[in-house]
Every structure is written in C-alpha cells, then in structure tokens.
Length: 154
Image: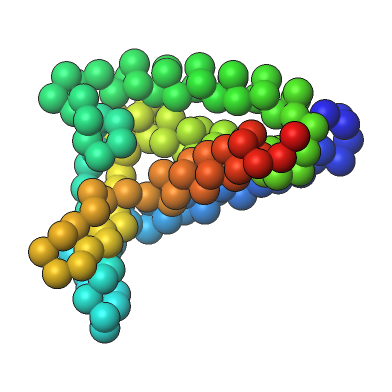
C-alpha cells in the first residue's frame, strides 16, 4: 500500500462509512417514536427500530454477549487494517475500507449501547429480510468488492 494516497483513500472511505452509520442510527434513536414508517409506495421498504444484541440477523442474541461481540468487531477491524496496508488494488482497498467502516460502526454500538440499532426493513408481500443498518450494508458491499478482486482479478 502506498502510504500517502492509498492511506488517505482508505481512511476517508472508512470514516465516511462510520459517520453515515452513526448519524443514521442516532436519527433512528431520536425519532423511534414515529416508527415503523412505510417509505415506499411499492410496499418494499419500512423504517423500523430493532435492538440487535447478537450478530447478523440477531444470531447469538440469546447469549447476552454484546461487549465480547464489540471486542470481536474491533479485533477483526485490526486484521482488516493489516489487509488494507498490504492491499495492492483500489478495488480491494475500497472493499476492505467499507468492511472496516461497517465493523467499526457496529462495534461502537455494541461497546457503548450493548446492541446494534437495525432499521432498514426490506420485504416483498409476506417475506421480510431481517432488519439491518448502513454498517451491515457497507460490510456486505465491501465483501462483494473484496471477493470480486480476489476471484476475478489477479
């Protein structure tokens, strides 16, 4: 990784992801009394308020271990930073930076609140995807970019 431009790019992407995630969760927390709220005339999107004490989709929430999940998020973040430093492509760097920003955003919530606020509810008829947040979206998009680089580009 070129320390100058690549470091600035990775820091910027990760920082923007954390800031957008934390602002969105703050707004949801502030206005949760208005929720759920239908945002689409096509019946596909609601804004809801969910306290997720587990990992993705509420897995492990019954074990009441949010502090340890927060520590795990930050440990994984350190490894992602290591991968960012070794990164040799913009695609990989962008993907890893999004993963880092999402992991930090959710890690902050777990350590300071004991849960992650999920609020995006996508659905079609009776099928609802589990609620998620911007940090989850950044992690998912980042992982897709990372794996595209890994499997399709040498």
